Amino acid sequence: MLVHYFSAEGWQSWGLSGQPVIPERMPVLIDDDFRFEDELGPRPTRAVNAWLRTLPSSGASSPNSWRAYALAARDWLTHLGRHGIGVFDQRQELVAALGTYADRRLSGPLNERLATGSWELQVTALSRFYAWAVSEELASAVPFTMATGMRMVEGRLVSGQRNLARLRRPKPHVKIQYLDADFAELFCWALAGLGPGGIEDERFRGRFPGRNAAMGRLVLGTGMRSREFSHLLVHEVPPLPGEPTTVPIPWPVPTLGAKGRKPRSSWIDFDSLAAVHSYIDLERPLAVGPWQPRRPLLVEAPDRFGARINGRWTAWSSLAPAERLRLVGPDGGSPLLALSYGGRPFTDWGTLFLRTSRRLRERFEPRFPDVSPHRCRHTFAMATLEMLVTGHYRQAAELAAVAGDDAGLAFYLLKADPLLILRDLLGHSSVTTTEVYLKRLDVNRIYRAAWEKARGEVGPDVLAEVDAEFEGLFANAC
Image 1 (cartoon, rainbow, N blue to C red):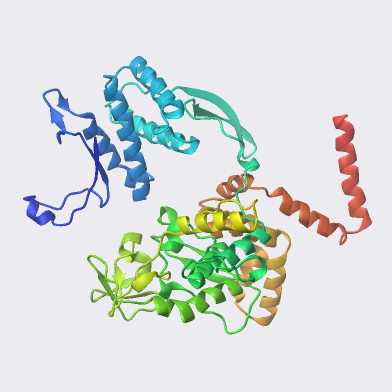
Image 2 (image 1 turned 45 degrees about the horizontal axis):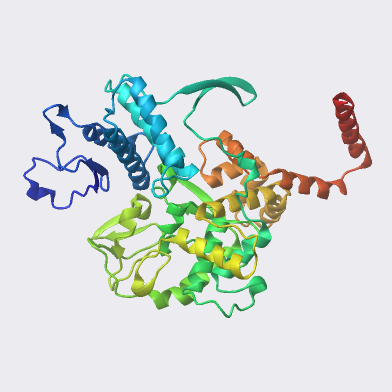
Protein backbone atom coordinates (compact mmCIF):
# COMPACT_ATOMS: atom_id res chain seq x y z
CA MET A 1 0.00 0.00 0.00
CA LEU A 2 1.34 3.41 -1.02
CA VAL A 3 1.07 6.81 0.67
CA HIS A 4 0.97 9.78 -1.68
CA TYR A 5 1.03 13.42 -0.57
CA PHE A 6 -1.37 15.50 -2.62
CA SER A 7 -0.38 18.66 -4.48
CA ALA A 8 -2.75 20.68 -6.67
CA GLU A 9 0.08 22.14 -8.73
CA GLY A 10 -0.86 21.96 -12.42
CA TRP A 11 -4.47 20.91 -11.76
CA GLN A 12 -5.67 22.98 -14.75
CA SER A 13 -4.28 20.28 -17.07
CA TRP A 14 -6.18 17.45 -15.37
CA GLY A 15 -9.42 18.02 -17.26
CA LEU A 16 -11.37 19.04 -14.14
CA SER A 17 -14.14 21.62 -13.93
CA GLY A 18 -12.66 23.16 -10.77
CA GLN A 19 -9.72 22.97 -8.38
CA PRO A 20 -9.77 19.82 -6.20
CA VAL A 21 -11.02 20.35 -2.65
CA ILE A 22 -8.12 18.45 -1.09
CA PRO A 23 -5.68 20.31 1.19
CA GLU A 24 -2.06 20.59 0.09
CA ARG A 25 0.18 17.82 1.51
CA MET A 26 -2.87 15.73 2.44
CA PRO A 27 -1.88 12.02 2.51
CA VAL A 28 -3.74 9.69 0.15
CA LEU A 29 -3.63 5.90 0.62
CA ILE A 30 -3.46 3.92 -2.63
CA ASP A 31 -3.53 0.13 -3.01
CA ASP A 32 -0.67 -1.44 -4.95
CA ASP A 33 -2.89 -1.94 -8.03
CA PHE A 34 -3.79 1.78 -8.03
CA ARG A 35 -7.52 1.07 -7.71
CA PHE A 36 -9.95 2.61 -5.20
CA GLU A 37 -12.77 0.17 -5.92
CA ASP A 38 -13.35 -3.24 -7.50
CA GLU A 39 -16.20 -5.65 -8.22
CA LEU A 40 -16.99 -5.76 -4.49
CA GLY A 41 -17.40 -1.99 -4.29
CA PRO A 42 -15.28 0.80 -2.71
CA ARG A 43 -12.01 -0.31 -1.11
CA PRO A 44 -11.17 0.49 2.56
CA THR A 45 -8.61 3.06 1.39
CA ARG A 46 -11.46 5.17 0.04
CA ALA A 47 -13.05 5.42 3.49
CA VAL A 48 -9.68 6.18 5.13
CA ASN A 49 -8.96 8.92 2.59
CA ALA A 50 -12.36 10.48 3.25
CA TRP A 51 -11.60 10.46 6.99
CA LEU A 52 -8.16 11.99 6.49
CA ARG A 53 -9.71 14.92 4.64
CA THR A 54 -11.82 15.72 7.72
CA LEU A 55 -8.76 16.12 9.96
CA PRO A 56 -8.04 19.82 9.23
CA SER A 57 -11.56 20.75 10.39
CA SER A 58 -11.65 18.41 13.39
CA GLY A 59 -8.69 19.62 15.44
CA ALA A 60 -5.68 18.22 13.55
CA SER A 61 -4.44 21.24 11.56
CA SER A 62 -0.81 20.15 11.14
CA PRO A 63 0.32 18.22 8.02
CA ASN A 64 2.62 16.28 10.34
CA SER A 65 -0.46 14.98 12.19
CA TRP A 66 -2.12 14.03 8.90
CA ARG A 67 0.98 12.05 7.92
CA ALA A 68 1.19 10.24 11.27
CA TYR A 69 -2.51 9.29 11.14
CA ALA A 70 -2.23 8.13 7.53
CA LEU A 71 0.75 5.89 8.30
CA ALA A 72 -1.09 4.42 11.30
CA ALA A 73 -4.12 3.65 9.12
CA ARG A 74 -1.90 2.14 6.42
CA ASP A 75 -0.23 -0.23 8.90
CA TRP A 76 -3.63 -1.27 10.31
CA LEU A 77 -5.11 -1.94 6.86
CA THR A 78 -2.03 -3.94 5.89
CA HIS A 79 -2.39 -6.06 9.03
CA LEU A 80 -6.10 -6.67 8.42
CA GLY A 81 -5.42 -7.66 4.82
CA ARG A 82 -2.76 -10.12 5.95
CA HIS A 83 -5.41 -11.94 8.03
CA GLY A 84 -8.30 -11.59 5.59
CA ILE A 85 -10.36 -9.34 7.90
CA GLY A 86 -12.36 -6.36 6.66
CA VAL A 87 -11.84 -2.91 8.14
CA PHE A 88 -15.56 -2.75 8.99
CA ASP A 89 -15.94 -6.43 9.93
CA GLN A 90 -17.78 -7.80 12.96
CA ARG A 91 -16.54 -6.82 16.41
CA GLN A 92 -15.27 -10.30 17.26
CA GLU A 93 -12.98 -10.35 14.24
CA LEU A 94 -11.80 -6.77 14.81
CA VAL A 95 -10.98 -7.39 18.49
CA ALA A 96 -9.02 -10.52 17.56
CA ALA A 97 -7.15 -8.59 14.86
CA LEU A 98 -6.28 -5.83 17.34
CA GLY A 99 -4.86 -8.46 19.70
CA THR A 100 -2.52 -9.88 17.06
CA TYR A 101 -1.65 -6.37 15.91
CA ALA A 102 -0.67 -5.28 19.44
CA ASP A 103 1.40 -8.44 19.90
CA ARG A 104 3.25 -7.85 16.64
CA ARG A 105 3.85 -4.15 17.18
CA LEU A 106 4.87 -4.36 20.84
CA SER A 107 6.82 -7.62 21.00
CA GLY A 108 7.19 -8.84 17.43
CA PRO A 109 10.10 -8.51 14.97
CA LEU A 110 12.50 -5.67 15.76
CA ASN A 111 11.89 -3.93 12.45
CA GLU A 112 8.14 -3.69 13.24
CA ARG A 113 8.26 -3.06 16.98
CA LEU A 114 7.02 0.30 18.25
CA ALA A 115 8.03 2.41 21.23
CA THR A 116 5.38 3.27 23.81
CA GLY A 117 4.74 6.73 22.39
CA SER A 118 4.40 5.42 18.83
CA TRP A 119 1.91 2.76 19.93
CA GLU A 120 -0.12 5.44 21.75
CA LEU A 121 -0.22 7.42 18.50
CA GLN A 122 -1.48 4.33 16.63
CA VAL A 123 -4.27 3.86 19.16
CA THR A 124 -5.24 7.53 19.00
CA ALA A 125 -5.36 7.54 15.19
CA LEU A 126 -7.40 4.33 14.92
CA SER A 127 -9.76 5.46 17.68
CA ARG A 128 -10.49 8.66 15.79
CA PHE A 129 -10.95 6.77 12.53
CA TYR A 130 -13.47 4.31 13.96
CA ALA A 131 -15.34 7.06 15.82
CA TRP A 132 -15.70 8.86 12.49
CA ALA A 133 -16.74 5.65 10.69
CA VAL A 134 -19.46 4.96 13.28
CA SER A 135 -20.79 8.52 12.99
CA GLU A 136 -20.87 8.15 9.19
CA GLU A 137 -22.67 4.78 9.56
CA LEU A 138 -19.85 2.98 7.77
CA ALA A 139 -19.02 0.81 10.79
CA SER A 140 -21.21 -0.93 13.33
CA ALA A 141 -18.36 -2.20 15.51
CA VAL A 142 -14.97 -0.99 16.75
CA PRO A 143 -11.94 -3.05 17.80
CA PHE A 144 -11.40 -1.24 21.10
CA THR A 145 -12.67 -2.05 24.59
CA MET A 146 -13.46 0.89 26.83
CA ALA A 147 -13.39 0.95 30.65
CA THR A 148 -15.44 3.44 32.67
CA GLY A 149 -13.93 5.14 35.71
CA MET A 150 -14.18 8.22 37.90
CA ARG A 151 -11.73 11.10 38.22
CA MET A 152 -11.56 14.49 39.93
CA VAL A 153 -12.10 17.58 37.76
CA GLU A 154 -12.15 20.98 39.49
CA GLY A 155 -13.06 19.41 42.83
CA ARG A 156 -15.86 17.13 41.66
CA LEU A 157 -16.06 13.52 40.51
CA VAL A 158 -16.89 12.94 36.86
CA SER A 159 -17.11 9.71 34.90
CA GLY A 160 -14.84 9.04 31.98
CA GLN A 161 -13.74 6.30 29.64
CA ARG A 162 -10.32 4.83 29.05
CA ASN A 163 -9.24 2.86 26.01
CA LEU A 164 -7.79 -0.41 27.32
CA ALA A 165 -5.50 -0.66 24.31
CA ARG A 166 -3.42 2.17 25.73
CA LEU A 167 -0.32 1.24 27.69
CA ARG A 168 0.26 2.05 31.34
CA ARG A 169 3.01 4.63 31.66
CA PRO A 170 4.84 6.21 34.58
CA LYS A 171 3.13 9.16 36.22
CA PRO A 172 4.10 12.33 34.35
CA HIS A 173 5.50 14.05 37.45
CA VAL A 174 8.29 11.46 37.83
CA LYS A 175 9.88 12.47 34.52
CA ILE A 176 12.34 15.31 33.99
CA GLN A 177 10.39 17.70 31.77
CA TYR A 178 12.42 20.91 31.96
CA LEU A 179 15.93 22.29 32.54
CA ASP A 180 16.99 23.85 35.81
CA ALA A 181 18.65 27.25 35.54
CA ASP A 182 22.20 25.84 35.56
CA PHE A 183 21.39 23.27 32.85
CA ALA A 184 19.61 25.92 30.75
CA GLU A 185 22.69 28.14 30.91
CA LEU A 186 24.94 25.20 30.06
CA PHE A 187 22.73 24.42 27.06
CA CYS A 188 22.99 28.00 25.77
CA TRP A 189 26.78 27.95 26.15
CA ALA A 190 26.93 24.68 24.21
CA LEU A 191 24.79 26.09 21.39
CA ALA A 192 27.36 28.89 21.13
CA GLY A 193 30.14 26.29 20.82
CA LEU A 194 31.42 26.90 24.34
CA GLY A 195 31.92 24.77 27.42
CA PRO A 196 30.70 25.32 31.00
CA GLY A 197 31.10 28.89 32.19
CA GLY A 198 31.62 30.14 28.65
CA ILE A 199 35.11 28.69 28.26
CA GLU A 200 36.24 27.70 24.82
CA ASP A 201 35.44 24.15 23.69
CA GLU A 202 38.47 23.28 21.56
CA ARG A 203 36.75 20.22 20.11
CA PHE A 204 33.73 22.14 18.83
CA ARG A 205 33.45 21.95 15.03
CA GLY A 206 29.89 23.17 14.52
CA ARG A 207 28.60 25.98 12.33
CA PHE A 208 26.56 29.11 13.04
CA PRO A 209 27.15 29.26 16.82
CA GLY A 210 25.78 32.81 17.07
CA ARG A 211 22.55 31.80 15.34
CA ASN A 212 22.14 28.65 17.43
CA ALA A 213 22.75 30.42 20.74
CA ALA A 214 20.42 33.29 19.85
CA MET A 215 17.60 30.94 18.84
CA GLY A 216 18.13 28.85 21.96
CA ARG A 217 17.81 31.92 24.15
CA LEU A 218 14.79 33.01 22.13
CA VAL A 219 12.81 29.81 22.73
CA LEU A 220 13.89 29.61 26.38
CA GLY A 221 12.90 33.26 26.81
CA THR A 222 9.53 33.21 25.01
CA GLY A 223 8.19 29.66 25.38
CA MET A 224 7.20 29.55 21.72
CA ARG A 225 6.38 26.21 20.15
CA SER A 226 8.76 24.74 17.57
CA ARG A 227 6.41 25.55 14.71
CA GLU A 228 6.20 29.15 15.87
CA PHE A 229 9.85 30.11 16.34
CA SER A 230 11.08 27.96 13.42
CA HIS A 231 9.04 30.07 10.97
CA LEU A 232 9.65 33.43 12.61
CA LEU A 233 10.64 36.25 10.23
CA VAL A 234 13.48 38.63 10.98
CA HIS A 235 11.08 41.55 10.48
CA GLU A 236 8.85 40.27 13.32
CA VAL A 237 11.55 40.58 15.99
CA PRO A 238 10.60 43.37 18.45
CA PRO A 239 13.02 46.32 18.66
CA LEU A 240 15.51 46.33 21.50
CA PRO A 241 14.79 49.01 24.13
CA GLY A 242 17.39 51.72 24.41
CA GLU A 243 18.08 50.87 28.06
CA PRO A 244 18.09 47.50 29.87
CA THR A 245 14.80 46.81 31.61
CA THR A 246 13.73 44.27 34.23
CA VAL A 247 10.18 44.24 32.89
CA PRO A 248 9.88 41.63 30.12
CA ILE A 249 9.40 42.87 26.57
CA PRO A 250 6.17 41.82 24.75
CA TRP A 251 6.59 39.50 21.77
CA PRO A 252 3.54 38.95 19.49
CA VAL A 253 3.36 35.34 18.27
CA PRO A 254 2.34 34.91 14.59
CA THR A 255 -1.32 33.92 14.39
CA LEU A 256 -1.06 31.12 11.84
CA GLY A 257 2.15 29.88 13.41
CA ALA A 258 0.37 29.33 16.71
CA LYS A 259 -1.27 26.04 17.65
CA GLY A 260 -4.98 26.13 16.86
CA ARG A 261 -4.45 29.46 15.02
CA LYS A 262 -5.07 31.43 18.23
CA PRO A 263 -3.37 34.86 18.32
CA ARG A 264 -1.40 35.49 21.48
CA SER A 265 1.50 37.48 22.83
CA SER A 266 4.42 36.13 24.81
CA TRP A 267 7.39 38.07 26.21
CA ILE A 268 11.17 37.90 26.38
CA ASP A 269 13.78 39.23 28.79
CA PHE A 270 16.13 42.01 27.73
CA ASP A 271 19.32 39.90 27.62
CA SER A 272 17.74 37.20 25.41
CA LEU A 273 16.37 39.81 23.01
CA ALA A 274 19.79 41.48 22.94
CA ALA A 275 21.33 38.13 21.91
CA VAL A 276 18.83 37.84 19.04
CA HIS A 277 19.63 41.37 17.84
CA SER A 278 23.35 40.65 18.10
CA TYR A 279 22.88 37.68 15.76
CA ILE A 280 20.81 39.80 13.36
CA ASP A 281 23.45 42.55 13.26
CA LEU A 282 26.63 40.46 13.20
CA GLU A 283 26.28 36.87 12.00
CA ARG A 284 23.06 36.78 9.99
CA PRO A 285 24.30 39.19 7.25
CA LEU A 286 27.14 36.75 6.55
CA ALA A 287 24.60 34.00 5.71
CA VAL A 288 22.47 36.08 3.33
CA GLY A 289 22.88 34.75 -0.21
CA PRO A 290 21.23 34.08 -3.58
CA TRP A 291 18.98 31.19 -2.44
CA GLN A 292 15.67 30.93 -4.30
CA PRO A 293 12.71 28.67 -3.35
CA ARG A 294 10.31 26.91 -5.66
CA ARG A 295 7.29 29.10 -6.44
CA PRO A 296 8.87 32.12 -4.69
CA LEU A 297 6.90 34.83 -2.92
CA LEU A 298 8.83 38.07 -3.49
CA VAL A 299 9.07 40.35 -0.43
CA GLU A 300 9.43 44.10 -0.93
CA ALA A 301 9.25 47.09 1.48
CA PRO A 302 8.94 44.96 4.63
CA ASP A 303 8.17 46.34 8.08
CA ARG A 304 7.19 44.75 11.43
CA PHE A 305 3.63 44.08 10.32
CA GLY A 306 3.85 43.02 6.69
CA ALA A 307 5.23 43.72 3.23
CA ARG A 308 4.38 43.80 -0.46
CA ILE A 309 4.38 40.14 -1.44
CA ASN A 310 4.28 39.54 -5.20
CA GLY A 311 3.11 43.15 -5.53
CA ARG A 312 0.29 43.02 -2.94
CA TRP A 313 0.54 44.22 0.66
CA THR A 314 0.14 41.25 3.01
CA ALA A 315 0.28 41.02 6.79
CA TRP A 316 2.85 38.62 8.20
CA SER A 317 0.16 37.21 10.51
CA SER A 318 -1.81 35.90 7.52
CA LEU A 319 1.04 33.70 6.25
CA ALA A 320 1.05 29.98 6.94
CA PRO A 321 4.35 28.22 7.77
CA ALA A 322 4.63 26.72 4.26
CA GLU A 323 4.19 30.19 2.73
CA ARG A 324 6.84 31.66 5.01
CA LEU A 325 9.32 29.13 3.63
CA ARG A 326 8.63 30.43 0.10
CA LEU A 327 9.38 34.06 0.92
CA VAL A 328 12.47 35.55 -0.72
CA GLY A 329 14.09 38.98 -0.89
CA PRO A 330 14.70 40.91 -4.14
CA ASP A 331 18.35 39.76 -4.20
CA GLY A 332 17.60 36.23 -2.99
CA GLY A 333 17.76 34.76 0.49
CA SER A 334 15.00 33.97 2.94
CA PRO A 335 13.61 36.60 5.36
CA LEU A 336 13.30 33.91 8.06
CA LEU A 337 15.19 34.83 11.21
CA ALA A 338 17.42 31.72 11.19
CA LEU A 339 19.45 31.24 8.01
CA SER A 340 21.82 28.54 6.77
CA TYR A 341 24.27 28.56 3.85
CA GLY A 342 23.48 30.88 0.95
CA GLY A 343 20.48 32.45 2.66
CA ARG A 344 18.58 29.17 2.93
CA PRO A 345 16.03 29.03 5.80
CA PHE A 346 16.94 26.73 8.70
CA THR A 347 14.14 24.95 10.61
CA ASP A 348 15.55 21.63 11.87
CA TRP A 349 15.91 22.72 15.50
CA GLY A 350 14.88 19.37 16.95
CA THR A 351 17.93 17.65 15.45
CA LEU A 352 20.27 20.50 16.37
CA PHE A 353 19.10 20.60 20.00
CA LEU A 354 19.41 16.81 20.29
CA ARG A 355 22.98 16.79 18.94
CA THR A 356 23.94 19.62 21.29
CA SER A 357 22.51 17.68 24.25
CA ARG A 358 24.47 14.57 23.38
CA ARG A 359 27.67 16.57 22.96
CA LEU A 360 27.16 18.04 26.43
CA ARG A 361 26.52 14.62 27.90
CA GLU A 362 29.61 13.10 26.29
CA ARG A 363 32.07 15.91 27.09
CA PHE A 364 30.95 17.74 30.22
CA GLU A 365 27.83 16.57 32.08
CA PRO A 366 26.76 12.88 32.01
CA ARG A 367 23.40 13.76 33.63
CA PHE A 368 22.37 16.21 30.91
CA PRO A 369 19.06 15.14 29.30
CA ASP A 370 18.07 15.21 25.65
CA VAL A 371 16.60 18.64 24.89
CA SER A 372 13.79 19.19 22.41
CA PRO A 373 12.12 22.49 21.48
CA HIS A 374 9.15 21.51 23.62
CA ARG A 375 11.39 20.87 26.65
CA CYS A 376 12.61 24.44 26.19
CA ARG A 377 8.97 25.54 26.31
CA HIS A 378 8.52 23.64 29.60
CA THR A 379 11.67 25.33 30.90
CA PHE A 380 10.24 28.76 30.06
CA ALA A 381 7.00 27.89 31.87
CA MET A 382 8.79 26.80 35.04
CA ALA A 383 11.23 29.74 35.07
CA THR A 384 8.38 32.20 34.52
CA LEU A 385 6.25 30.63 37.24
CA GLU A 386 9.18 30.78 39.65
CA MET A 387 9.66 34.50 39.04
CA LEU A 388 5.92 35.13 39.34
CA VAL A 389 5.67 33.22 42.61
CA THR A 390 8.77 34.83 44.15
CA GLY A 391 7.55 38.32 43.23
CA HIS A 392 10.36 39.13 40.79
CA TYR A 393 8.05 40.45 38.09
CA ARG A 394 5.84 42.24 40.62
CA GLN A 395 8.82 44.19 41.96
CA ALA A 396 9.93 44.99 38.42
CA ALA A 397 6.41 46.14 37.53
CA GLU A 398 6.26 48.43 40.56
CA LEU A 399 9.49 50.10 39.46
CA ALA A 400 8.23 50.38 35.89
CA ALA A 401 4.93 51.88 37.04
CA VAL A 402 6.78 54.58 38.97
CA ALA A 403 9.09 55.31 36.04
CA GLY A 404 6.25 55.28 33.52
CA ASP A 405 7.96 52.57 31.46
CA ASP A 406 5.49 50.23 29.69
CA ALA A 407 2.66 51.07 32.06
CA GLY A 408 0.22 48.65 30.42
CA LEU A 409 2.37 45.58 31.01
CA ALA A 410 3.29 46.81 34.49
CA PHE A 411 -0.40 47.10 35.41
CA TYR A 412 -1.04 43.60 34.04
CA LEU A 413 1.80 42.13 36.11
CA LEU A 414 0.55 43.86 39.25
CA LYS A 415 -3.10 42.89 38.96
CA ALA A 416 -3.25 39.49 37.22
CA ASP A 417 -3.04 36.10 38.91
CA PRO A 418 0.21 34.20 38.10
CA LEU A 419 -1.74 31.32 36.53
CA LEU A 420 -3.65 33.73 34.30
CA ILE A 421 -0.40 35.33 33.17
CA LEU A 422 1.15 31.95 32.42
CA ARG A 423 -2.01 30.86 30.59
CA ASP A 424 -1.75 33.86 28.28
CA LEU A 425 1.98 33.42 27.67
CA LEU A 426 1.66 29.72 26.82
CA GLY A 427 -1.40 30.27 24.65
CA HIS A 428 -3.68 27.89 26.57
CA SER A 429 -7.43 28.19 26.02
CA SER A 430 -8.26 28.14 29.74
CA VAL A 431 -6.53 28.32 33.11
CA THR A 432 -7.64 24.71 33.71
CA THR A 433 -5.35 23.65 30.87
CA THR A 434 -2.50 25.53 32.55
CA GLU A 435 -3.23 23.89 35.91
CA VAL A 436 -3.20 20.40 34.40
CA TYR A 437 -0.05 21.30 32.46
CA LEU A 438 1.72 22.40 35.64
CA LYS A 439 0.71 19.24 37.48
CA ARG A 440 2.87 17.35 35.02
CA LEU A 441 5.89 19.41 36.05
CA ASP A 442 7.59 19.60 39.42
CA VAL A 443 6.08 22.84 40.72
CA ASN A 444 6.54 21.82 44.37
CA ARG A 445 10.16 22.95 44.26
CA ILE A 446 9.15 26.47 43.27
CA TYR A 447 6.62 26.91 46.05
CA ARG A 448 8.91 25.25 48.58
CA ALA A 449 11.73 27.66 47.71
CA ALA A 450 9.37 30.62 47.95
CA TRP A 451 8.19 29.43 51.36
CA GLU A 452 11.72 28.94 52.68
CA LYS A 453 12.61 32.47 51.53
CA ALA A 454 9.46 33.88 53.14
CA ARG A 455 10.07 32.22 56.52
CA GLY A 456 12.61 34.88 57.40
CA GLU A 457 10.25 37.69 56.37
CA VAL A 458 7.09 36.77 58.30
CA GLY A 459 6.37 37.35 61.95
CA PRO A 460 6.50 34.66 64.67
CA ASP A 461 2.72 34.80 65.08
CA VAL A 462 2.22 33.68 61.49
CA LEU A 463 4.73 30.84 61.84
CA ALA A 464 3.08 29.72 65.08
CA GLU A 465 -0.33 29.60 63.37
CA VAL A 466 1.06 27.54 60.50
CA ASP A 467 2.83 25.17 62.89
CA ALA A 468 -0.43 24.71 64.77
CA GLU A 469 -2.22 23.78 61.58
CA PHE A 470 0.35 21.11 60.79
CA GLU A 471 0.37 19.80 64.36
CA GLY A 472 -3.35 19.22 64.05
CA LEU A 473 -2.83 17.45 60.76
CA PHE A 474 -0.21 15.11 62.14
CA ALA A 475 -2.31 14.43 65.25
CA ASN A 476 -5.26 13.43 63.11
CA ALA A 477 -3.02 11.25 60.97
CA CYS A 478 -1.84 9.37 64.02
